[in-house]
Image (cartoon, rainbow, N blue to C red; front, top):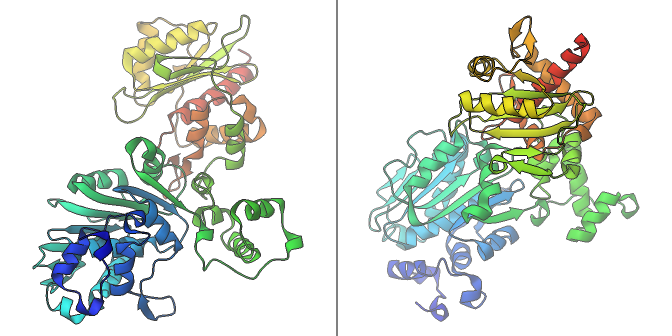
Length: 505
């Protein structure tokens, strides 16, 4: 079928014509003289329920049109709330399912309730099709348990929740939509990897979510998209036409609001909506109603550290003057004769997966961060590295966390490397982190970030501070998919420094 021949009438549309239209679904508007087959088919065939309870044809809104204009085979969508993109992904993939024989579409929601809601949207698409199609080529053999089967096409449409362990196993999927990925339960990265293993080589993938703080699977996918070849789509709240409220007085505009109006051509009614969301959502307004692709990730209510201090320092943090070990070791301040230093170590096992062994070098007098290392090393290799570093920094105090792998590293430092200046607590080598000391050292680091943020040089350390959060069980640590090894090494180093100075050593 040529681009000139794709106009159709729903009442006379046949199964053969549907299959021919399927060949044009991936064409861009520019290739079809400014028109788009997906949008035309959606408007003529598919129906949705409005927020007022009415049923109407699916006419693509501005956000949906913008996605269609730029979409690729692999897409990741960062968006504000309720932009209609889950519905559009369902519509796009439903059309591909009924126009391309042998198609399996899989939509994955973050909760069971969301999966059921998506399936209701898809079932409405089916129920509102012309009777000739539903009783003919699109007659179903199964349309329950969130699965629709079209036997004459050998096609299926499935909707599952991310909590279903076997989602996608044993299948070959042509279309995959992962909804609200940032809020998937369990290990989202592992679940996503299993789903991608089921995706056909030429299949279409859509990852979509509102942000949920820095870190986690969705954040990692968004950050790595330029390297992995995914097309990034960002849709701020003002692209949704409904997001307006009572217009504000122009004379009441703040400098920030005036800048937004000038940069994005916002109306006073949109500024009224923005003020309303900020009043209702407070610190989470920037997350739920995203305005740019960076700050929306930072707007998270569960961060342990003072984010404003972290962000301010991140903007001003200097580049290292030197680096070693393929960039794993960075130096900002080399050792100065006559100064005393401390080397703090948070050891790990050394495997290529999991935690890093992190090392922070501090100036004793000021607490300035001088150097930092983080890498997948452990055992004797780590013992020798930190010993040489302590020697280089004027025979520095060597503070090693003795939990887990640390006891072995300490034994090697003493017996093999024969380094004498090892920090001790109550006569025992090393620093012990427990339920009492951990909150205290984290609190000291947070206070340091607020009071003297310019002591911290490492952007990598500051990035870990951004994703260090309060967990559901009340504990603190790295958000899923991120690390806190530098945070813990720095926290231990600052605490040990205070104890050493207090003791007069």
